[in-house]
Length: 119
Image 1: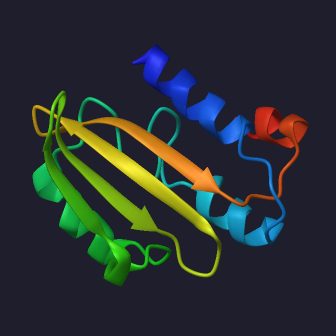
Image 2: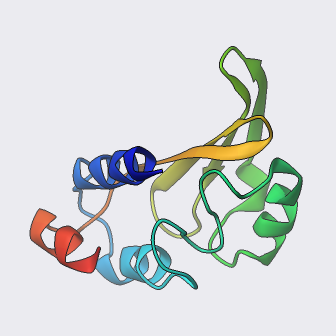
């Protein structure tokens, strides 16, 4: 679990870009739960069957852009999603129908210092 959190943190740290900071902050730092949970997604606990419900309740996900890749070797499914109003996307990896990892990529506007302070 700690390795997954560190992977997510490392991914975010490498994605410093030039997008509206308030949009990034609103989506990523105002989560309804604490780490390693992010907006009610918990690695090792969130199940794939709850994915569509999560999308339907999420005000910051563009539901029309979701793609699912099934049976990709190690993972049961990979969901590719995009966020509304910012140039950021995410891959959610499911193994044994539980969330295994979350990868976020795109143009962000945050310094490494602020990212570390926020976590």
